[in-house]
Length: 312
Ligand SMILES: Cc1cc2nc3c(=O)[nH]c(=O)nc-3n(C[C@H](O)[C@H](O)[C@H](O)COP(=O)(O)O)c2cc1C
Image (cartoon, rainbow, N blue to C red):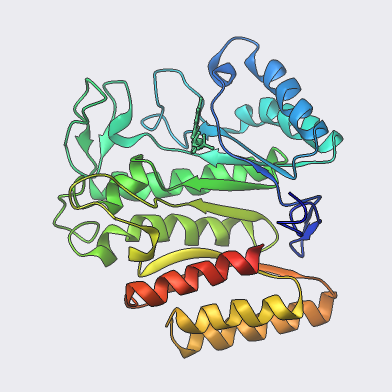
């Protein structure tokens, strides 16, 4: 394994924090999140994984507000008094030398309760409840709720958040034309449908600062009529670019150029990377929100494989 992926077990310096390796435990609900005494058991569960040596753990999805709960009374992070129990998880994982991010997941029309909301009032085949169409005010308040939850997660000692943008949940419901029939600024053209995701990522980053991890989980394949067919369909994409050795710099920079994101983003990111690595003598990881026109599929594929190469 380490021969095929020589960087896998090497530490990853993000500038403001350091992962002991590049192994990430993906988000998985265990059921403990919502059960009596669940957080005590969950902290032991995560601590064992941390002792096993995983670099970063992502928790199961936690809703940023009441309407986003998957089932009634499932996990939510919206209030200060909820911070304490999360501290239990973060302390347990940190004691074992690992890092942990909180996943923020709003169920949207997948919610199994009558307070479900969605971009459009379209019932999902997997829930008996028809969601209420979100008003403009509700859209704004939901974005606020994501930002608030991220700020609370930071208070609870998490190393970052993962914003769940895939697998048919609320953010994905905005992006996918099949589930978004809105005619206002949150629906219609792709630039409008992606606005909800972009605002959440952007405002979260501004609220938590630069020295905290923000991951965006994106959909590769919607498997729905009018759905995205692969990640390269995104003219706006969040890409994690890792600069760790000079040769990888070349790969990443070429990838950025191939992305055709425009001269400004290219110069800005290059300059920023140079500054940070020179000032802090570190490898730099940055998350770019790339906005530009769609690039031809072949170019995008080459770019993606180069990005993966750069990360490896
Ligand atoms: C029991 C279980 C719970 C899961 N909970 C979440 C979740 O809360 N959030 C999420 O983004 N993905 C969740 N997933 C999806 C996993 O992160 C992962 O994408 C999925 O298991 C496919 O990965 P694999 O092919 O390695 O199994 C869950 C998967 C399982 C099996």
